[in-house]
Length: 324
Image 1: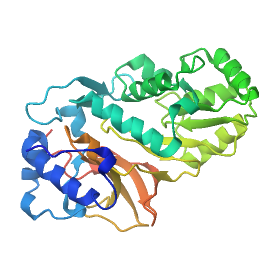
Image 2 (image 1 turned 90 degrees about the vertical axis):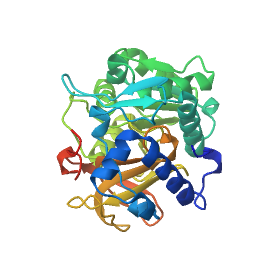
Image 3 (image 1 turned 135 degrees about the vertical axis):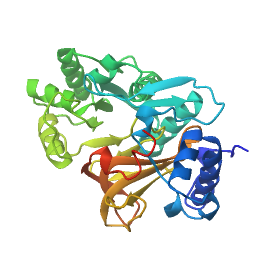
Image 4 (image 1 turned 90 degrees about the horizontal axis):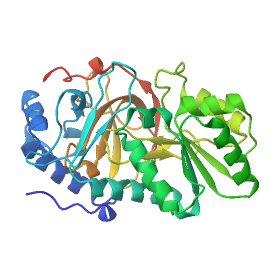
């Protein structure tokens, strides 16, 4: 039987019980996840803690349809990528649940979208189409009910003028942008913004040389004239997002949790403070797979916040070649 899921009712006291309930449901009803569990010889009945749950390598979303049996996708999101790159596919069976997850997540960290003018600079996502990030930001823009909110593709001059105008009017502005496009913007003009929050969504998308987060944020802070850069940590394969509120340390909403695994032995979890591969539990993924081993490296802080240290090749995720 499918577990009942109310994101509003998930907290530190209920998370583990609900996660184990969803694990058992997906281990039986997600055929790809079920086969993976069988191939690694995991005894589902013996899984009694988060650390014992098998995490599905994220690369499986590129080669398999990850969805609960007999569910019909209402929407298929595709990851961004460079030309010729195979893109991950997330088959979303309940688009309303995605809206609930990202709306509640945004409100949890930033409050009501109506308090903001939201400007979006996400050209690569707009160009490639079927982006879960564009879907989320488009909905948040609509929720602002503000005629000044909107997307910008390559019209950087219009965006510059809008940013300066709104900042002078002391409007509360949130600019959400992919890293390379934000760098393009500040190369055209240096800003001194006093009422604007800058949020980068990561990734150079093959347009620029990759930079470590701390270096990127220093360049952006100087270019926009702000004291902090905010950051969103999300991916096509998830329905929830973590956010950094300006210090390179991320926080998750109550229904999402980060675990760190050994790089050499991906079935072994590490304690707080140790660096390793990032595993994500996203309970909003109840209709696909809530337990994903990413290609990101990170470290957990004692207060359950976490930082991202970089990426590694998918071949380092033990088990990722089992079902190619």
